[in-house]
Every structure is written in C-alpha cells, then in structure tokens.
Length: 297
Image (cartoon, rainbow, N blue to C red; front, side, top):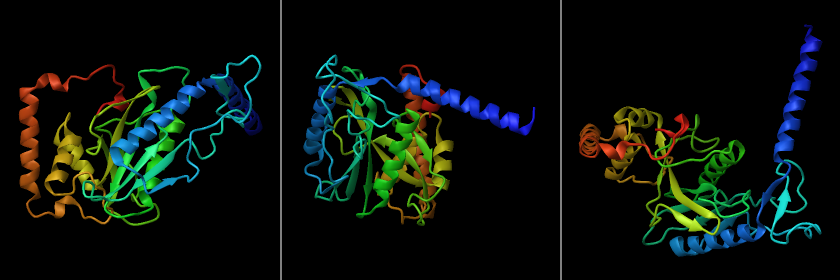
C-alpha cells in the first residue's frame, strides 16, 4: 500500500468514525422543566450552605431558556438537541459551567470557589439516581486568585469531554504547577468530601449529587499518599494535612510537608491509626457496587 493509499484509507476511516459518532448523538434529549427546576434547586442549596456569593462567572449565569418554540409534534416540556452541532433550541453558550466565588467569613476563613453545572441534567428526560455527572467541585484558597477557577474549569471540562466523573479518594496528577504558567510545588490534587457541606449527598429534582473538594499536594506528598495504605492513602494524607493546620486549603506558596521538623512522627501516627482501623473493621474495605479499575484507589 502506497503512502497516498494509506492517507486515503485513514481519512475514510476517520470520516466513518465521525459519521457514526454524530448519528449516536444527534438526538440526545433533555427535559427542559426538569433542568430548570434542578438548576433553581441547586442555587437555593448553595445559598443555604454558603450564603450569598461575591462573584459568579460567567456574569450572565442563569437557567437555560428555549431559544425557539417547540415543533408542533414536540411536547412543550421536552426538547431534543444535538450536542455536536449548532443548537437552535437550547442555549449552552457559557452556561455549561459556572464558578461561584465566596469570600471569607468567620466560619470559613478562606476563599471558596465552587462549580455549578456538573450536576445539571443536560441529557436527562426524567429523575435518575444521579443528576448529571453526580458532583460539583470546590477549591479553598487562602487568597482571592484566578487559579482556582482555572483548575476547576480544567477538571470540569475533562469530565464533560470524557463523560467521566470524580469521587472521594481520587488522586489526579496535573503534570504541571497548579497555577497555570506560574510556579508552585503543588502539582497534584486529591478529591475528598468537602468539610463545608453538612451532608455527603444532596438531592435535586433530577437526582443526587455530591460536593467534593480538590486539595493540592506536591509530588513527594503524592508518592507518600500512594505508599501509605492501599485503602486509606488519601484519607491518611488528609489527616496529615489537618494535623499540620493545612487541612483542605490549597495554598500554592506552601512548602512540602517534608519541610516540617517532626513530620516522621506525624506520618507514623496516622499510618498506625489507619492500620488499626483496617484490622478492626475489615468490612469497611469492601467496595460498594461495581467498580472499574479507574474508580479504585
């Protein structure tokens, strides 16, 4: 086969893949009333948990509205759209994801950045066990900054594009500084339950979702996390951060925990506790439901 033949074959193969993908997505549907009610329910929940926000990006954040009247043979509460082609019925421009910013207060002495959109039922006709991707992500920063929103958007768009999700205990390597274009030893994040949310799971009209926080850690802290305990590595690292007063706050300027004078004794204490718990409650280590390799620690 000549080079030209190979290129033609490759182009033909790629065209077939695009055609197949387009056919599989061209009639994805959503329930407009359900989407709006869930959107409003999440906003009310955020107000209850975190109070009024200082900023929201984009500034025109609001529930999506139908841009044209439904077709004669379509229900007024049900519409269809193509997620890959220009959409005439649902305005998704700048609305798939918003970032809420909350300034510090006496109960939360740090800046809080929180997504709104990952739990939106973009492709749901009815209530399901999980709404959207089943989560919203949070970052806590000691200072007002641009990087938290940038990292949250990067993580969210990865979820959107790969139709995946994140859950507590996940460890993500960023492969670069947590500050895009800047310097920081924090090059990884851990996902865990947000201390700020009173419950682990919240219910919307479209289904449930969790509010999880992303905590930045260094490369050597990541290696320690992976080596400490098979089931409780992430929990162990979070306990170490808590004992050092870092807790769930991500400060890009902080040094590695290994700069702390008595870090060895703190690590040993946390590891011993995890081992004791492991032996006392072996059933707690059994996975709940079916897990894929990517969903395991």
